[in-house]
Amino acid sequence: MKIVCMKSNLLTGVQTVSKAVPNKTTMSILECILIDTRSGEIKLTANDMELGIETTIDGEILDKGLIALDAKIFLEIVRKLPDNNITIETNNETYKTTITCEKAKFNIIGKSGEDFSYLPEIEKNDSVVLSQFTLKEVIRQTIFSIADNDNNKLMTGELFEINDDVLKVVSLDGHRISIRRIALKNSYGNKKVVVPGKTLSEVSKILSGDMDKDVSIFFTDKHILFEFDNTLVVSRLIEGEYFRIDQMLSSDYETKIKMNKKELLDCIDRATLLVKEGDKKPVIINITDDSMQLKMNSTVGSMDEEIDIAKEGKDLMIGFNPKFLIDALRVIEDEEIDLYMVNPKAPCFIRNAQESYIYLILPVNFTTVS
Image 1 (cartoon, helix red, strand yellow):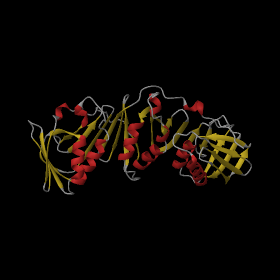
Image 2 (cartoon, rainbow, N blue to C red):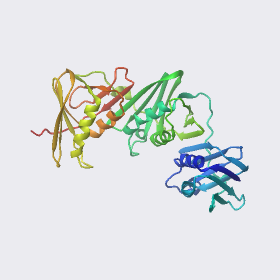
Image 3 (cartoon, rainbow, N blue to C red):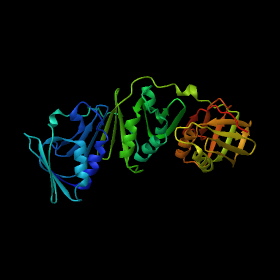
Image 4 (cartoon, helix red, strand yellow):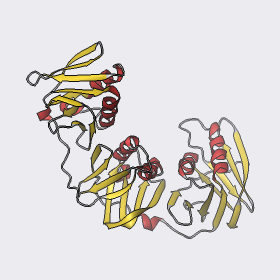
């Protein structure tokens, strides 16, 4: 095999597929990136058996073939070569690979591409199409509330549920729930799958976020495929019945407040200055007629601040993990937000009138200090 391509194209391609190279594996072939030019295109592929990424790059094919190269070494070589044309040439029998650019020349030993684990074949029947911008935003607005440990596998993924022309994305970690609803351009059959958080995080990094570029999503019983630009991302789904979210949602409230989102976010952000890492100090919120008082007491000191609000219903004092409030507020685009609460033990809901977003946050117990 012999190919020539611009460093920028090669680097983008190698960086894209590297996201599917496992950190630890007993199968050394999975630590490689496959270069396959047999179809007349330069295809780069990586696959950790849960997540696989394939991308096609521009370049000139002088001799067709395939080779698997150690991903870390290959990426570092490409990254540090001059900004010019890179030539990659392999010996089909010894797998010796020569990478040259200007006066720089590397010789490395690859592996047989025949041993590589190819991506599973996904039938591209019925695709759900949305803009790259929308998918990137939906992931950003929900990914923070998946669980970061494997105690409950379903919590490490996000529910993608399609009903007619609405996509609902849900994540939860036992302390909070994030829900986004997106209107799709077309209607589809009902689908319900749980996509690993790692997959969505990597997809989000690769997506350009361009409003004018689409991403097509295909589903099978066990896999999901994202297709966009010149890239395919295939992921295994998380099996099992997702949590019954609707039973956790309520439209009842005793206290509703409307306020400026940035004011609340900035205020909670300031309060966390007094919290050492690892401390679980709640921010205590005291809601009265036209103001909300926020208090933070820690070993470092104390802080209190008032924010103007519009209130309906009862006065209320309630405590929250400040990080959970900050995470939700940071991804809401609205200037003004509505918070709905029942009592100090019941969840707080942040949602808009259309319910295109709902953030449920459980309160925490606290002791008042006079």
